[in-house]
Length: 390
Ligand code: PMP
Ligand code: GLU
Figure 1 (cartoon, rainbow, N blue to C red):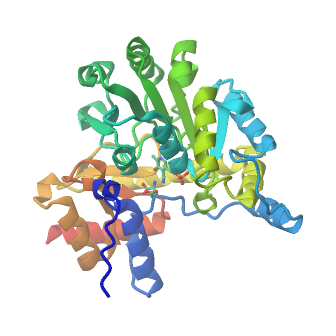
Figure 2 (cartoon, rainbow, N blue to C red):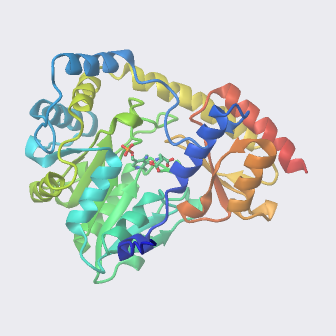
Figure 3 (cartoon, rainbow, N blue to C red):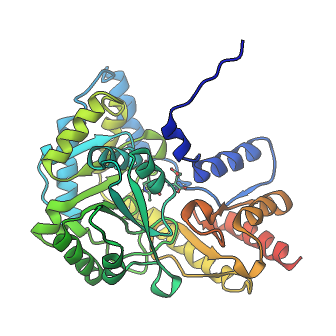
């Protein structure tokens, strides 16, 4: 018997995640014993610190293994409020916080409760792969604001104004950014905030890489700039990158309590609470000092510097050095290869995994991750250099 599954129409609007697909492929090839250099990873290569694991083990042993309040245990929400006050000069009350299953889930939930059919969501391009797909899943319309390497891949208030229509509802900002590593400074954010306030546009501020920032730059939360933009902003963060906890799936959002209430309702009928054990682990992480993240940030900066020094020697590749996150977005147009072909051939012929730029909005770019040891980056760059000589 042949069954016609007739998948829901909404699935036609989205593609699989190229970042997850390639990372999985590279990990699989490696586990099969292939000598792959993985410069595709979208996660820190450091282990989760032991004190966080201990908190999770303790949670299991003490039987903290049941449902919790949908949007997180009160102690964790309180701790998140303190984190926002301490790190970002942002005052949120616990009822303005929702803990979800990763920052990706927090962003998705926000879009689900805000976007109506045909609402336009502004997305600076290049963008993280999941933003437009999530907007599509919510029946909204992604509208891209093109940026250029000349302006470090950042939008200006003018660029933003030009793309605003009567249907514009949300701007998604990501600083430090994936895949470009760009970081917005306070003046730039002030200008963007002015436009959003004047036009009543919500901002989803994805700050997941806030702690991975280099050259003594300072991360600014747009919501902290003034009371008006605060009311329009949903601040997104999580534990994945700063505590090397990608697999634990804890992210959170903070914003107007009506939005948080709506997210809570949505979560009630979809995932319920994020894993109870992971919440206890997150609590231990957020209560700790910044020692771990300061250590990994220092390591990432060394790796960034090394990768930049190697890329600078390649005539066929141009790039802007990342100011944050752990990726460099490289222009490969001089190779005359499309990113998909470039990445496929690089993997097959030189055993180096990188992510093609199509999913980020540019088919003449690739993303190289420096979430790998200096030795791996060196090996990968030796191979890329040789391969490009052919
Ligand atoms: N935003 C950006 C820009 C990211 O790169 C990631 C990494 N996957 C996320 C959000 C989501 O992180 P997570 O769901 O693991 O918390
Ligand atoms: N954010 C990471 C990346 O861009 C992880 C993969 C994903 O969630 O898409 O590679």
